[in-house]
Image 1 (spheres, helix red, strand yellow):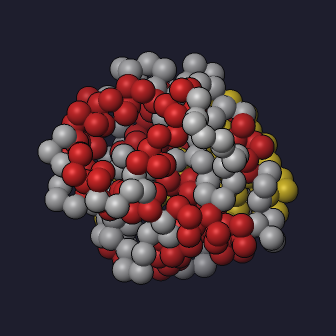
Image 2 (cartoon, rainbow, N blue to C red):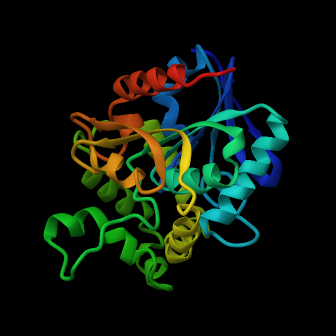
Length: 285
């Protein structure tokens, strides 16, 4: 396999870089790192130069200086990429919290973004309204949005039990519990067991309401770049298309079959194929 290289960009953003061709930016979610995309980097690298980024405060990236709302975080990440790529436009791909970040990034810097792909992400501001008490099925899917946003309690209950929490979380959110490689899982455990690491992840959820208000403002001017919306069939599924149509006009996508929430790891071949078809169709460089 082609050796990728890890580097640090502006604002302390960690990147895994490889491949050649038009630039492609990938962002993982919580509780993961850039290694989440390892299963799709090889096919992408044959046509594209990729930058797989740890979002600020996650993995090995430094925390953001002005808050974890996604308008701010996406601006920091965009500045890091623009500093590296100069005037070259690029494609954006985000999964989970990476998808939260990818939308306001595209909204604020649309002239730089060729296309946007969002993978199984409840983008702030566009989740359906729920009545309480939640059904058991809905609660299993969305419990973390309420729990992580609480002050102090998540830290109290998870400190020293990161392995137990992440094991339970990945088992809950995957169709095949062996989908994640042991090496990657250990990488996540190591990253999120560091002092303060869980808190930095929780801060994205604590800023969810602020990010929602920002996104609803951005959505007053819908994106007109091509957007791909993919969900795991056992997670958000084709509902991703409905969600993304709230803020974009040119939307395609659907469900990845036999798949839970972690698309790039659970079904890397299918995800790589869908991404490459979409990227190639919207490549202008």
